[in-house]
Image 1 (cartoon, helix red, strand yellow):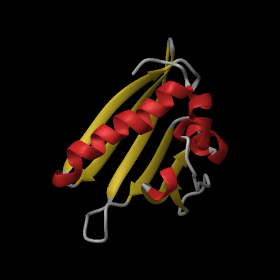
Image 2 (cartoon, rainbow, N blue to C red; image 1 turned 135 degrees about the vertical axis):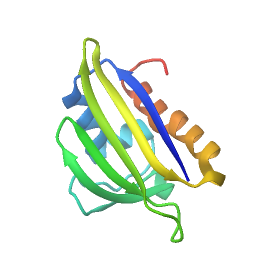
Image 3 (cartoon, one colour; image 1 turned 60 degrees about the vertical axis):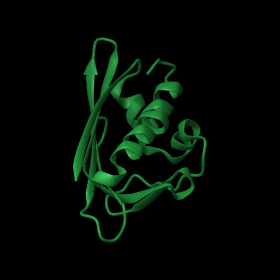
Length: 128
């Protein structure tokens, strides 16, 4: 199992970034696909028509989101923690994911960078 960490600077306030990550309509705008999402701990979610599915664990408004992403029934839980750090230019988004299966790491992290972080960058009109 491997871990992944990436920072993404965004020219928006932590409040704006948090809304983009927690409101189904906003998520649908930057993913361009069907989304099932409720900002409530214990609820399950689905992005990209089910390509990413998991469970919401914790919400600290405008600061942190913790989720479990599913890789299959045999895998250890993969935890995604998104922290929003206010900075001079807006927000530095910190994306950390634990327990990514070794055989899925390259494809999965490329997908995260292209679609998840890349989608957010496009949404906030920044180069990534």
